Amino acid sequence: MTVKGSRDAIVCSFAAQAALVQLRRLTAEIAAVRLNEDLEAIHRSRVASRRLRAVLEVFQDVFNKKKVLRWLKQVRSITRSLGAARDTDVQILFLEEQLNSQPEPVVHWAVKRLHLRWRQKRAKLQKKVLKALDAFEHSEAAIEMATEFSPYTIYPAPGSPGESRVMRSLAREQIIERLNAFLSLQDCLEHPEDQVRLHAMRIAGKKLRYTIEIFSPLFSEESSGRWLTELKQIQDILGSLHDLDVWQHMLPQAMEREARWTERFFGTNRPFIRIQKGVSIFQEALLRQRESQFAEFRKRWQKEKTQALWREIESAATGLIPEDEVKSDDDETGTNPDGENKPFS
Image (cartoon, rainbow, N blue to C red):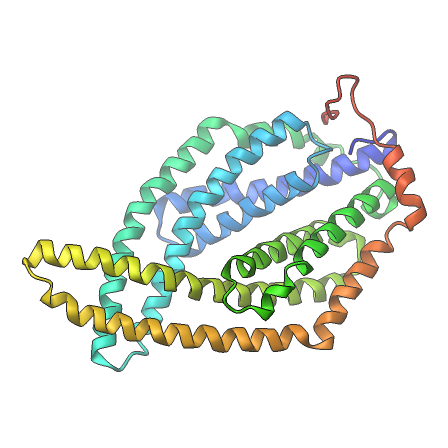
């Protein structure tokens, strides 16, 4: 969406400054991620890369389209590499917690072996992280984005985001679209075994939260704060359920590898039998934990307070632009003669 007049400047200025905030957060963590001494550095950089992608996606019709698609591809590569490493870090921390809470010797021994294998896995992943960081820096995507967006911090457009009908129209469209996508997946809560849709619901909720964060200046701090808090809590629960589902897939695969390694090292699989028994008990405990968490989450979702929140978000987003004015905003969008979206400059 590229518009004429002063409102075009407000949208461009807002979008550029939002992108720069996340770009700076991402690049500020690169050195620490390379050192791999601070576990939170990779988490912060991963979150910044996701939020940067969210800004680029939301405002992709404001930015130069060809540049945006290239930047998204490069940032997505960083997110993917950081994600694999961060997920493994979280799994290692989870195993360490389990080590401190497993009094049964056979389970403790099995978890200890899993912890060793996951530490070895994480060391290998660091090489991929460094390779992805190198590729991102060599691509000069960060420099390109900074060059494109920085002028808007030096000469910001006059007026607040709420003064732009185009900004409000875009926020209305994006939030309602994300909210509908999120709520369209809620039927999976009637099917505990539907891991695919449950995972999709988690991702949709995350996209909704990031979109509301971007447009939060258009709403009261109290309202947007409540929405974001609830969405973060729901996302955390869905994330925990997803983690437990992932363990159910990973543990059998890990045991297949462990059996091969044991046979190769000892010439017999007898030492593996003890580990296999402990992992089996551990896996069953995780399955029970997943069933309990799912039941609790479904109860929370069905509460009127939760359902009222979605109606409140929809009402607030819809109220940004009256229905009869939505089309008039669309009519004001413009493109270049060749059909390409107009760039910033």
